[in-house]
Image 1 (cartoon, rainbow, N blue to C red):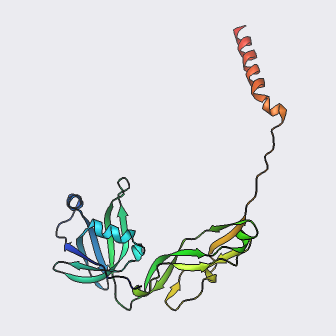
Image 2: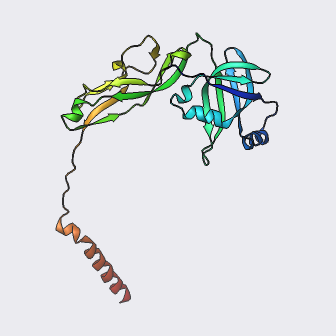
Image 3: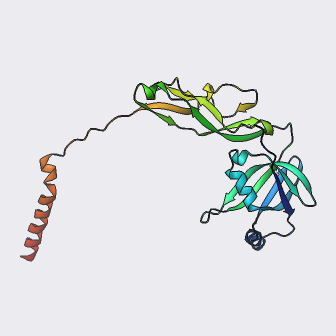
Length: 219
């Protein structure tokens, strides 16, 4: 299903500094910088709730949307960077990148493991995913929500590498082909060995030694 176009309206910022940023946040906005596409950077104030909702959506930071800045114009943009308040968890700043239709960009996308490995269902192993995102290069409209990788054939000790991801004409994977994405390991129960009787009695010997030393000091 084609994604519904998102339009976010913003105001151009004329004043700067920490006090101005705090004033914007109290009013429900956050400061953003829009740059890229060989144009001058533009400082804007954007409704915090609208940007936060985009980051929480299924496509998250890879969501492409229209940013309409009063007195400047409309640009197609993508999140480049963002910052949350470490205490309150509120979005407090964002950098947005202008996009051109045919330009190639580099983004990170999630890797989803699909299927139940034979090493899990028949050999008692456990599936471990070591890499959850990979970096790709593609056109803005070709960014996938996620890359699905079938792990059904994996047996115990088998390893899935980046090179095992099927090639696509929509994107180029930038991570090393040798990078390990997932493996099926073996679950082993640790053997519990009872401590020797003399080790268990050791605290009493130490305690006795302390009492004898105290007795000698009193003498």
